[in-house]
Length: 168
Image 1 (cartoon, rainbow, N blue to C red):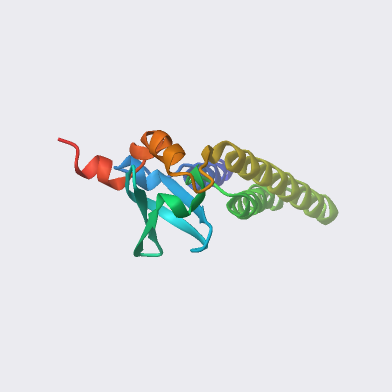
Image 2 (image 1 turned 45 degrees about the horizontal axis):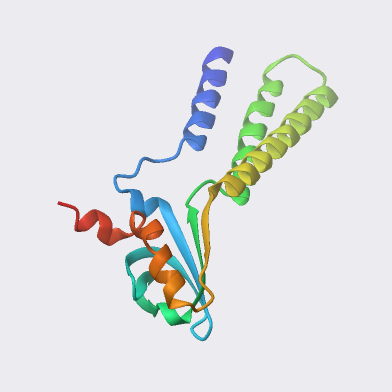
């Protein structure tokens, strides 16, 4: 009985930390474009060429010309610190609750539950922070210079939706 419960908890923890597979690479990346007059736009990079780019910002395509772009940050969609906190707490509490299956005194059971839950929180937050740090892929500083944008936009082409749709 104890083996089945522990095996179920391990399978649950594994399912929580394994991310879903995605069929197209552009969905894995988020672009954040800072402009001088249009504000900041986050979303999936729809299309890019030497004159500007199009960002799908909350379901609305936004066309941004190169002369307005201050900077472009490309980031991989990954595990966040908040998700790490949540999953670490859940897994730690689930694993720590197995202490109630044994014949230990009540104080020892609560101590084991609290310590394993705390360890799960620390591990989850640490994993989330590491994922967020490693998720930053590229930062381009354009500073409203169309010549710099024309030279640098090829680096972002393979992360755009049009690159995968228009591919032969």
